[in-house]
Length: 512
Image 1 (cartoon, rainbow, N blue to C red):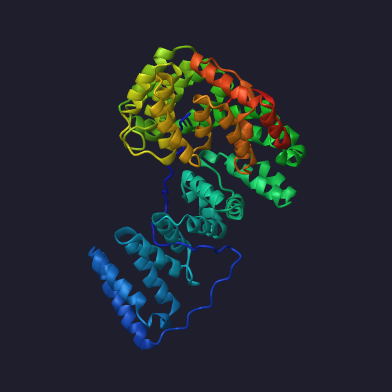
Image 2: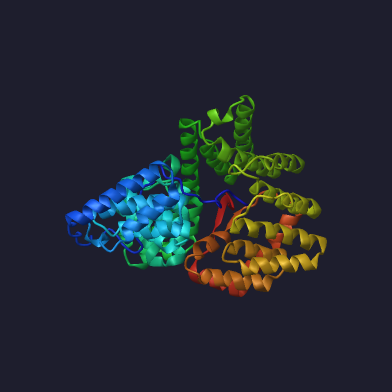
């Protein structure tokens, strides 16, 4: 299901005054202090800095940036005291970050963070500048420094931003990800509402196992609470020693009950949060408590309809209400009320998403129409998407187009959509795998599954997807596609590959 975890933005609680480096870690020493400046050089630079600050106060940004650049590029700059150099570079970095070229801001903050005077704000500025110029490797290493040196301030970053940088770290290299994940773990980092970030801890556990650090891996794994992450670990033989050390934690029935109780308690203690309500509803749905989950949705909807100021009732109304409605649609589907599900999702798709045009609910509406064998209406739904989509969002759109084209016998559009999904398979490998099932190409689907199993980072998610889950009520179209998928899993080569690296077990939960 197309979910909200696609758009990832940095919001920092602190005001911006600085940034951080590219490959430094906590263990690296500071450079030697810069010699004190000569009096004439210092006097001139101080006056020039004062003049530049006046330009900043007057909001004359082009001239301010020009003046600060002139100070920093003067031949005498290296003879100034470290404190004065630091003051010039951070002032220049901040001005350029907000009102000038991001590349210039990045260069200033890179220089500032090489000084022994550099503090949290300097590293923070470099992080924001690195993000602006698209230097993902530096974003990873700079965030690593920030959480290592100032662990108590890691909570000032939005969890989604950190999760995004973790993904970038995984693409940069396994050691980069290990350093960042270790730093976050040692900082006792958590998601909002004190929820453990289970997937990052699973990734850290795996990297520690690969390094032969089993005791540390067991310690990290003890913090994993997400039931489906635990399933992915049970399915993967690389985690066997970790699971053996704490078998009770990996009892999935017990874990699901623990998680449900935890979300119930959290939602009761923070009734102002729709995010916690959503977690609770999802947990109820996964355990097929459809009526209870629908009642929870209806309670939220009723409370919102009873007020003219829903944002005062729920602190995260703008972000999560559309997802409560989306979940309600899914529950109506489960209860065989498809027409009501369409009405609900149509209404949800008219609401703003991230303060702009809706994308996710329109894509989900298109997929719902495909599931109901109504391909023309599916195309009409996604045709209403006008807001900019993420890379993952674009693959989701093409997936709906492919499904609709397959049902309509439009081979040209089907081929065009399949080509796009293949070319962008790195953005959403599961979407490409599903597309091969929709296109009824089992040989290619099996080949892709085997490739993904060989990928060490993709393997846990792949193994989680091949488990046997509780079967929810399904439309004839979904039953047909599930049968094709099970045919791929039954192939001898696929079965052997799964058994070599993992195992298949049966669960009472629905597949997420």
